[in-house]
Image 1 (cartoon, rainbow, N blue to C red):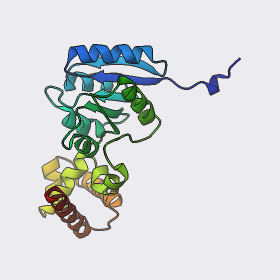
Image 2 (image 1 turned 180 degrees about the horizontal axis):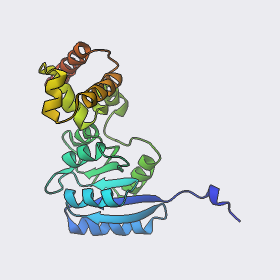
Image 3 (image 1 turned 90 degrees about the vertical axis):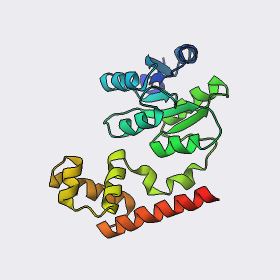
Image 4 (image 1 turned 120 degrees about the vertical axis):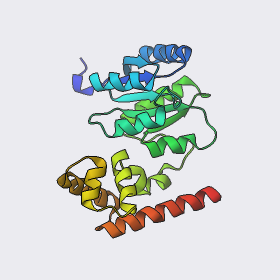
Length: 216
């Protein structure tokens, strides 16, 4: 008799796609795969967000062009929530979509033009803690700490670059001065800096590097 501890744990998943035919087909594949338990499906970003806030899941598979919020904004919102699912974007290749997905906070990207089995395998790998971006050098992108910041931390860093004081930051973000200090402490730690001046210098250095990269 097999010990329960030797059995692989079932991966809970939720799917969101604006194309109902694609959503139905994906649902069937996830239902048939014994590695997964499909908890919910949605056709909008708002529907997906509401679902995973009520019933947490490990993996979320998203269409990048979800109405009305969009995949990018949805992922950024999810990053700031506790117990949010790890996200795999199921999108079309071409352009910089995989890089946008990674920058937003997704943990994986698979092509809509590829076999569905590739999507299932990517989701299993992401659930195991891996980053799955077949079209990118993830190690190089992850070397930039900017990609590891939450949406709030990025906004805070941008506000710092405008020279706002802690009191002004508290007013702009509608939080207390102590909360500002807490967020700044986390921000400095992620950027490996020790002061406001160094954080602002890092911000402008990162923007300059991005601009040079886009010109190449």
